[in-house]
Image 1 (tube, one colour):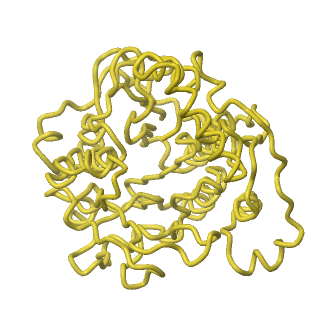
Image 2 (cartoon, one colour):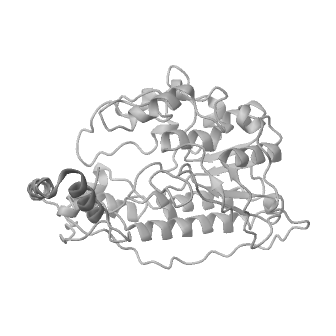
Image 3 (tube, one colour):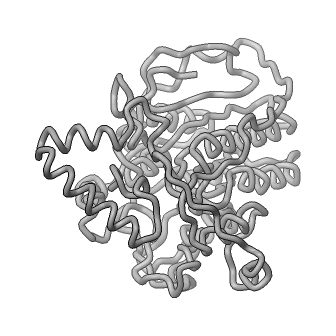
Length: 391
């Protein structure tokens, strides 16, 4: 475990680029703050974004959009080619140097016409479930572990797996609770590591588990401080690495192992990770641990489309017209409860909002805004906690 590990970007738009390219583009670096301002500006952070509203409420964004040519998407979307780093991504580097890989879930570079290069899509699982909070990481892990089992004797040199459940859905009604999302992510990660540890290549393997950014998770040391754990036969057990590293060091280490050149000046000048490697491997397989948290859902008024999306996601499916036809009449709405959306925090967001509002604008102003929020929540059939102290 690395206890002084930093993300190199501040938000998701940069973070995915630093994680997979050891750099972000000039365009993203200059524009992400405007894109994240919630003022309606259309960003281009590196993945597609729809330019038209869905036809109906139960038509979410295509979770496979980042690996599909733009001309094949249901709705028109941005072409993010302008936002790619100069050297593109590690996947491009591997393809250029004929190093085999398999990519589960990360976006890949398009050309100016919006098409994905054949050399990239050939080593990308275009059917891997992308961003959909109702699809759990255990579903994604099942896709990966089935693929590992089918390729256990001929794995490529590099495998990338995206598991987003640690992001959680916060306190939003109808979604799983943060505790369950994190537990599900742990279980999915364990299943993948265990599957890798039962392959022929395990004796020569290193696994790094990190996140793309520390956005909204700033801790008491630094807003960039993030998470990194290494697994593998050559990793010393029980080591707590206190040397300072960042995402660029992970990229440099991967490049050194695979024998490919750096993508930018940042990874070219970064150190390969050290201090964690053993002299002799211990290639005993890992054993997956069960989930220790029951599947629980945030309370609140739950629209039928979200209920159906979660019902579909429980079995690893998306909400399609066929699924609605088969399950729509049998689905029931979740009961409505009042709850505090930030009860897990030592000082809740609601209390923080109250204190800061009164301190800056006065008690009368706070009473007025709370009355407005109460009317707004009633009009939308949702508990007050769905709107208080949120964006």
